[in-house]
Image 1: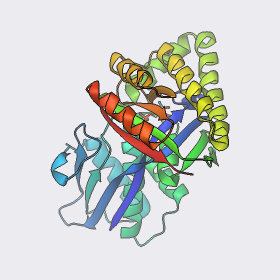
Image 2 (image 1 turned 30 degrees about the horizontal axis):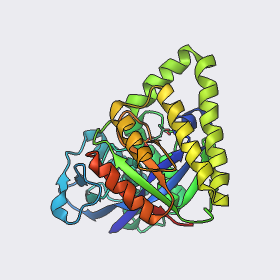
Image 3 (image 1 turned 30 degrees about the vertical axis):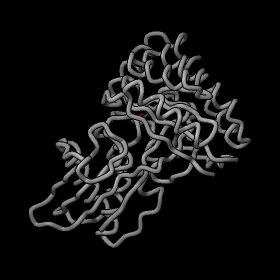
Length: 312
Ligand code: PMV
């Protein structure tokens, strides 16, 4: 059985979304694909992912990645929940670098949920895939907001707010959004920035809460800007969000370098995306040609980068 799911970028609202504010997320063209079959020697997972390159041209560019025992346990639990055989072998190919803030773990969760459901002869609508992937993400993440599985299961662009149930509004950009994703090459777990920020906030809520609320406001307004096709507006929001995220302590020198490179090459705005502390930065381009120019500028700075078009 073969299934897949897209990676994602958080356009705005990362970290704020953990505290109940809004986040704006978009699915990427790059995907995680899973082939799952019954195997008497299972359960087993084989994982191939790009070491740092986001654009593998052949399978030779993908390296085998050791599978953490928590992942195998969480996948076995998912197979049991779905009613699939516990004796499975899953071959996972990720076009996304792992730990890069591009939603690889959520995309893996959604793709596995779809694969196991097929193996069990069941349907797997987006809400179900999202729910199952969220359980799997908890093995890596601690207390994830749920935005990553929501976008990886649904695709497109969403404005997300956590809750029971989460509020998910689909956003239709008026025209294609051209982004550049620049990878710092620094892999980190999401917990490594989420938990320390949570401790800092617990100590000084009066200092941190208004900043988190502002990030949520930037995301809500960013959704409206996308619907109007107002990329100047969105670019200013990217820059503002990055400044606040840096003040919250979730940036790092490599991300600052990536953001500066994208801005000095003429990005309409640039920011870290996802949990920070490494991972990736995004820059907003005027159009596809401009995006290619930004990719070359980031590469001249020694960064791996790729362009993404997010279509209405
Ligand atoms: O999965 P990442 O690394 O893109 O981070 C998710 C975004 C956070 O808001 C930092 C965490 C969360 O649970 O929403």
